[in-house]
Length: 204
Image (cartoon, rainbow, N blue to C red; front, side):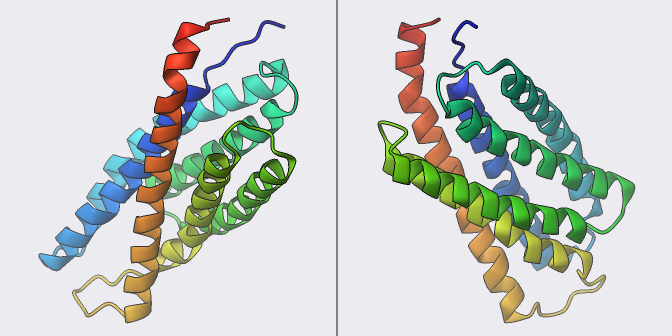
């Protein structure tokens, strides 16, 4: 099997997905401050883009799992979480489009988040990459973002239809998730950008 390395683009994809979600949260927050309580138009618009990215991520992840493109354990390390990421995004996208509770997708995200952190810690302890600390940060940030997505989904399902002062706990949870998404997106972008020149210089 020929060695094929598209990890730089995969990293850019998950980076842009995380930053897209952070942008939605910021947009929704300012809409809320203006007294606009209906998040439905924003979420439905997001679900289309999210579904496209989710389907692409799932296809690439599943194909890579079966074809085993990367050497050694790296298919397991990179593509298992990539498939999980695609499943989470697709679950949220369908939940929004079908207008059902998002907390079930959120609970799935919680479990996959814990799995992702476990993968990162295991890879760090084994020293699988040349930049083990950066990889650990990537996995932990995305894992924590997935974990905090669960309480965010509970908030979304209970979001009031009229303007009230949001509980402080809601503000804190959403702020933490927003920060985690931005941090995860930036780390993924930096790692992908650092890997790109070497990948272009040494194609398979």
